[in-house]
Length: 165
Image (cartoon, rainbow, N blue to C red):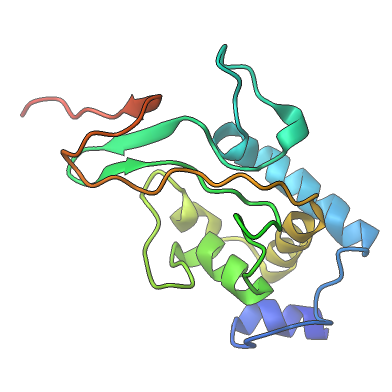
């Protein structure tokens, strides 16, 4: 069992400066594959006004929000290692958010983020995904803060509606 596996499996190490190395090309390549099949870019990649993905911005945060009934409107956050994204997060904090939906400040992610499905990632795949996120170029791109239910939200956003009973 490697130190890398222990750090991700237990998620108890506050800082892991040497536990995950973004220069581990096999690990980063596996993370890239996982990010692709998990469709991280589907929400976290900014889009141009015509809706086309801005590939050069990577996963710098979604420009289209999601309004969820009774919860509010949310925008997918910046997942790059910039300070406006995951730059101040530890590997364990990133792994916890991916697999439990709990952010470092204790907030819970909106249910549109499929963390419950991602909770099934094995420790090696989770380590690879975190390493790939850390290896991305940092992109400064603050996204809008969540907006409470019923409050006006800046467009564009998807409105999720529930059928009447």
